[in-house]
Image 1 (cartoon, one colour):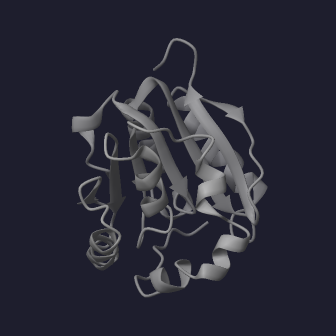
Image 2 (image 1 turned 180 degrees about the vertical axis):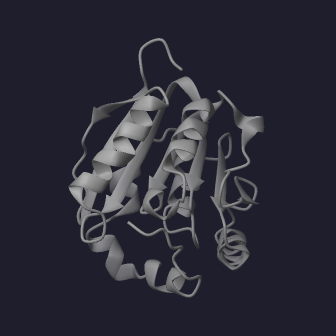
Length: 189
């Protein structure tokens, strides 16, 4: 599948309140995110999941929101200020070939990759970085749009995850998505 990044202006459509009917961030994240956690939102866009995660981790937690596009991050920062969540959310730009989060190695309790892995040119590198970020008990939710990413393409992403030392823990049901919850394989990587 060709790798192309979602244009920044589509970020506004991704914030649509109608999206919550099928992909309610609180319902998806509440079983996975707890107060005080350090979480990472990979490909955060304008923060559809970021703001709800910040509410879930609370004032003792931290959300690191990472995106390739500065315009997405600027809009997220404005939204975080308006929601009084800017002290919990840290935005970071990344490169196409690296998340640039080595300072968080082994300290991330939860990572979200929602409709983003298929946009990354080197999914093996992405999964290796993800595995390095997770704490021994950390988890990562990988969800790809089912109308855009085939089951075979998701299997290729999962093969990259397995090569990086991650394993599928469960397969949660999320509307219009192919989703897996990943954890470090026994013994880590």
